[in-house]
Image 1 (spheres, rainbow, N blue to C red):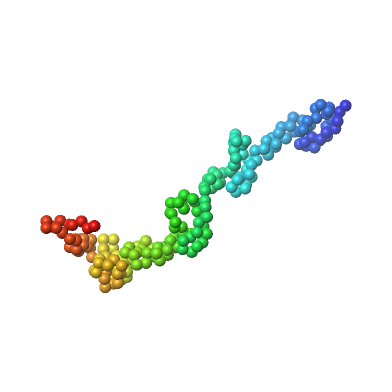
Image 2: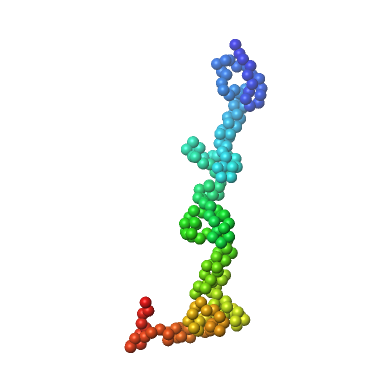
Length: 198
């Protein structure tokens, strides 16, 4: 006795013996090939664990792999461990690599502007206070003469106080003159050699 069944691919009705009816039934080898190809394609279809995009996986380790990615960029971004940090200047929450957080220590900033503002505030009154990457006393000395200082021009503090950046205390001299002034201030022994300062 034969039973009427429907082809899983084209929907055509065919007659089959009961012993020949299986989970998937096809009317011809052509429909069998197309159906198997579609099943294998759906089996290979994976969802990217980072961006959620569906893609066809052609690897050989689908049973072994725990995560699947559509491209190398998604794989690298997923494996990159990030943590939440707080900017030390504006208290803004930022996401940063754990390696960067451990490298920079307790200070984290959301951008270069917050970093510069933090430095200017924390180092106000310091000997080598910097503004926009340049020493403050060199900027003030240049403003006093109305131009930027050249690379070979040094700034000497007359009273020896490196925190006193008043224009009267700053003197623009050459590197040779600067070394002579500071060498005269150093103590010497009876043989004219510099005495090491503690």
